[in-house]
Image 1 (cartoon, rainbow, N blue to C red):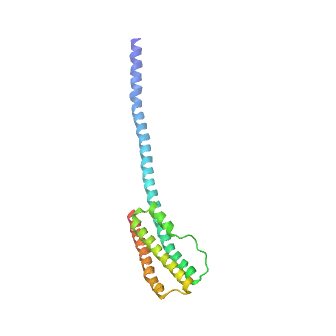
Image 2 (tube, one colour):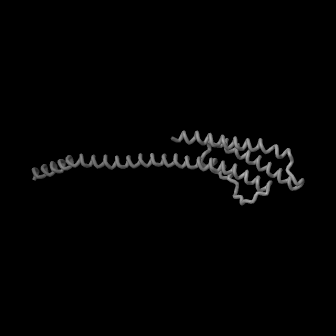
Image 3 (cartoon, rainbow, N blue to C red):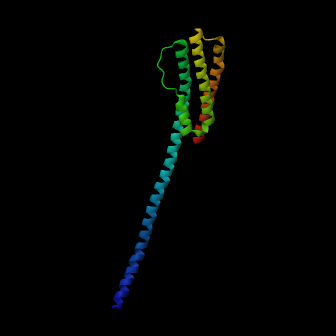
Length: 170
């Protein structure tokens, strides 16, 4: 009986020793699979964040150019009787995208918002003159060029900085 117990324990020890490489291999395979999936997920998540940032930068720049066009259309409608429908001002979209997705453009977005407000005030002044005096004063007409120039510079600066940010994402 002692011989049988010795053989049984030798057999159990042998089985354990024989299965040990299989168990270790299985653990390594499972760990490698988990690690590979984790690394792949992390890289994919980073790529998704970069792609989202790039899309939001493009949307922001597009909205900035639409804001410039919107102001020109607003001017033509309110001062020169142009007939057209006017949607909501795109500057709100510029400000939202800048705040939520591209804080690096905070200065450029703020500058553009300020210039848009100045341009809008110029339009209101022209409307008031047209309403009360039947025409827009020469002084107000002359004030257009510097305001428009500043608007194009603000949009250009925002687009330029956005292009730099996009290149840094690569």
